[in-house]
Image (cartoon, rainbow, N blue to C red; front, top):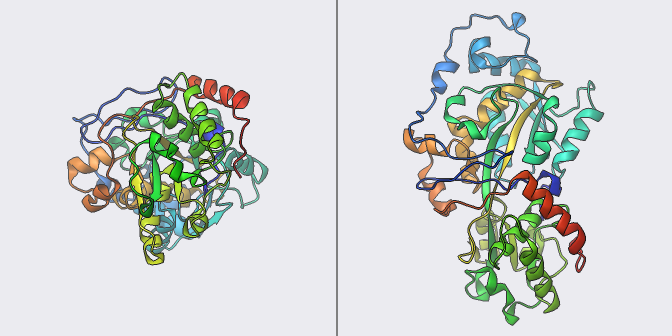
Length: 400
């Protein structure tokens, strides 16, 4: 079910820090802590800036801020003239992208063309290069950190109106890429099975043929991070995922782990009643499964520190609709857009600033029920080491 089939190279396990948490940034990947002294940016100031530059005088492909074009409203007005924004790898049930798309279209009158919703991060880049200049190339990317950092020459720098709210560790200094949302690895399950609170609970003989990992860890970010979670629960570390691989091999040997990539259909059918996945994939299923008589529960396991991973927003420098792309980015990083992520059980990058300003959706934040301890962070070197170990040792099951 990794509904957005992220290749492992798209996975970046970076630290998330929410209220009352602290952490340090990974060496080569985005960090997360918003300084307590950081005041919220004023969206209104940018959107109400005087329209000193006419649309004809603006080079929309190189525009680096809305203020330089007369404000957010001016940018989005030009986006409406362009008529469309092309997205890629944005499934409607991933982090609430469906609602984000609908609300953006309704607010600005700009059509959203969402192609290849289940593509991985590298495919996003490949597609942009293959379709360059055709008008069908993606205008916006949503990328895992490893792929994002490897392809910065593909992006146009842009700083949205809320730039000051985004911690320095969560953005490239010129705006080539910006962290947008994150989630936590969870065990989600049908409550009729009993209570699950720990990774170790999954070895219960009662769960034979019931445990599913969201995606092959050799290819999918969710699957990879599931192995990281299992490693941390079994004496491993960011430098040593071997105990995680050994744990899943044991689950396979006793018949609990099944080779099925779960999706809402397999969950509803009872084929995959226990799923290891992101909060923002599984949280939305609670309400959709309830009418089917399934009480779907999510738990961040208590026998391991939480595991989190940011994705990154970037504008294609070859965007066919450059103003619409910038309008999209303005919306994603506005209070409305950030709260949309939150309603999809994904924690937005501006969360700390929005809490301070009182603009966060408190009910949505409470529903996420985020852990208050800082998650483990893997640097890119640690990810590469883990990938190499998986390549050599994940040979006992193929999840598909």
